[in-house]
Length: 282
Image 1 (cartoon, rainbow, N blue to C red):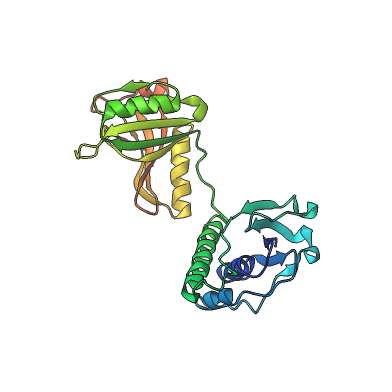
Image 2 (spheres, rainbow, N blue to C red):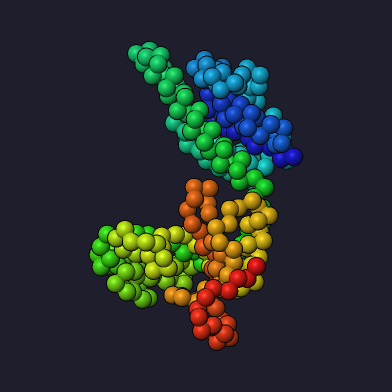
């Protein structure tokens, strides 16, 4: 089991809080250590705000950096601008989380302000750790070749001009309702659509999406989504109205629609049904 090492110039607060929160969050599933380049006492405000969330910083303290076995360290997380990695740790994955130092030597700073600073630092560290934890053991997913995004705009012409400037190319096509920018070098398909309050359909949809290789890749994405517990809004199908696509509709954790799509081959386009009704793929 590899270890996450939290490193800070002073081990009095940030690295200790990070290690304490990580141990609580990960349990025994991953090793956690903190290290400091010089000896320091734990900040009493760090002790206080961590006890508020059920973590006792006196249980574990930071180790001298030279005592850490580099072969056990998989990730090093530095928390201050002055942190310098020793050569022995340069092969480890490094993340830099520049959390402002909440401590102060100014006796004029009120106690409540210091507590607020330490709580902010604690919560910022916890938020980053929660993302780190969520990214462990991510299941297999689709293999996108393109990213698609649609946004609503108030003035289609002005927005078309702006994004033509921003992306360095005019839209590939446009109507009175949308303009589509395709930049193969960016692997991006970006659409601006008018925000007029009309019912959502293929011409006004606001969503995100990824393009995959072909019909089988769309079906495979569906199987992976089910295995991963991802919410499926519409199972895979071939649609013919608008832009013919093999598509699958997912929902992200906030309910945003995400389309997984593949463009039809010429042979597939030749099988277009007369009624243009969607054809289920699974």
